[in-house]
Length: 503
Image (cartoon, one colour):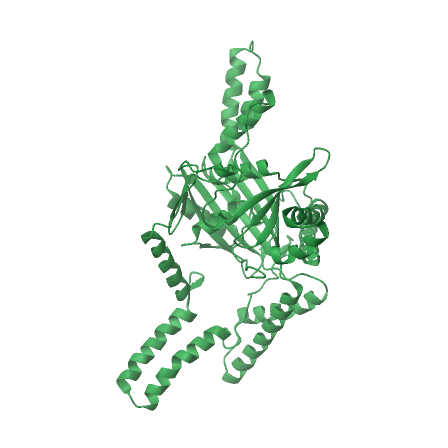
């Protein structure tokens, strides 16, 4: 039987018939005018205030596609204000002729505060790993390109071992008391044939027969249409509030933080290779990370970059690097239902975990493109709560679960099976925390990217169908498509649930 992961529950359980403390407070305060009108026998006013309180109940309690009506209203107003003041469209400094420093990243939206620093020299090649600083969220990150054999041919026992390897990785990250998040990003795109074209240029003989040339050209065309190329990245994230204390042992400033991050990267690499069977782990330097960012925004640019790298091998004077000032798009626009960047459109959706649990490797169908030129991306994030926060949250959740059950029993309200399962999982967290496990709140975001000549709405529906076919439920990130794209496609450590520590 395949390995199933189903040990997850809601972050918070409402203790008063499913309502949180904030929701109950708002509804209680809103009920005071209704009670006053009833006490004063103002029946007309009572009718109006009761209708207003009912509208308040809908805005606060009733969820609409994953958010409350209040959340939708706030997001819609913010988007409308951005449209009126022309804040939504974004243009790069390079497109306006204002890119003075090519080493400073110029990225849109939620990536605007990103800065990339070179770490200290390491290894025989004296390479410098890129250390990402997110000034807006006050976190640091390092990214590695990884190669995994996949789970298509793995049996249940092998999947179980790799599942334990992931658990050991997350527990080890929690024990460092520095790493707050581990993010896996996988990008799948139909092969552009760039490597094969370079191989043909190097190996094709000038005196080769015409038939041999024709066969190789046709074979390259057929293979390029049928093949799918996959890129995988692992990013570890550490908040500035935690890293600053550890960095004092290495000195001060950016270099000290870079040394601390590389120390954490060494620990994580050991678990990636041993427990999760990852064969290759390469911590990206600044030029390679810039290429990963550029191909994330513009998948079609990869063939040109590969050709430039091959030309540099023959002529060292060729500049094949992508400047950070040009790693992002020349223009971007956050629309309500999709994200537009350069000549491409993208749609992102969160992947809701099913109540019955998820089989390890079940998200593979989400990464399969359906048409040439289509790119799929999937981000699975594992935010790790600090030990003190995990203990406090678990205690609060257990108290809320006990209080909710008591109130339902006294009111004669039957507890549904789904609620019973959520309560049982919540109570089981305490014993697992006591045994040394970390409290992790995983989530996933899937994205489809196609050229602007294609109908992005159609490909968005295909992405939703792929998520449902894998056994999950998709939820579009409307009014937040730019953040969903950046988190799921650009391997810079962006998160959708992160709170700034120490602010």
